[in-house]
Length: 213
Ligand code: PCA
Image (cartoon, rainbow, N blue to C red; front, side, top):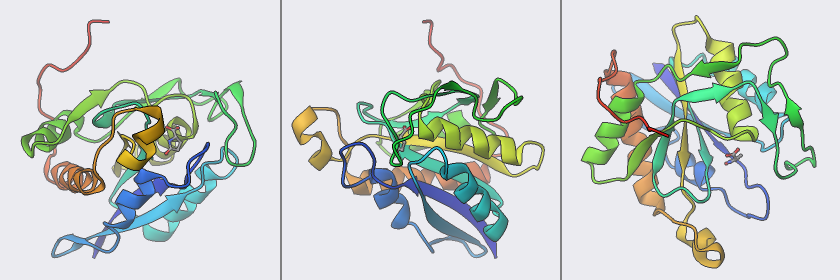
């Protein structure tokens, strides 16, 4: 049996729920084909703990592909991240009260890593199912970017493909703030399509999708 690892985050800031965990946990144990199984696990929203927890999961499950998922409140669609940067710059404290400012994720590490997933093919496939999706060129500078960078750093050169997807808030979270939201089932469907597409696409599609500024 081959394993695909999906991670989601615990709630953070004022939230009592994190849609990234709610969505990935619904995919835990699901077979994507006869011999590919999804393992979904939760990561803490804490700079001091998330990378080690992730490394533990990589060790334990030896996945053949990894997609980490997080909440990006304010975004309206499933955003498939292209690049992780070697920078922590926290606007708010994490769940352990830590708020690193302008520190590297990995001292002496490269400035950035690209996703090794076929991001445009994934976006195209999610859109084809009628779900909003786009390529994003920033995963922020909080714990999601730290996990994304740590993931790419850990798997660099290994042949194991990995990347990060941000998802919008749930309607119940958007009530007070008025940020865009997406239904949980839609997120789950989008993530499932993203996984299947990533598994079945060796070379990404070449199509426009960048930004002029
Ligand atoms: N989103 C935060 C951290 C955890 C999460 O779900 C982020 O985008 O950094």
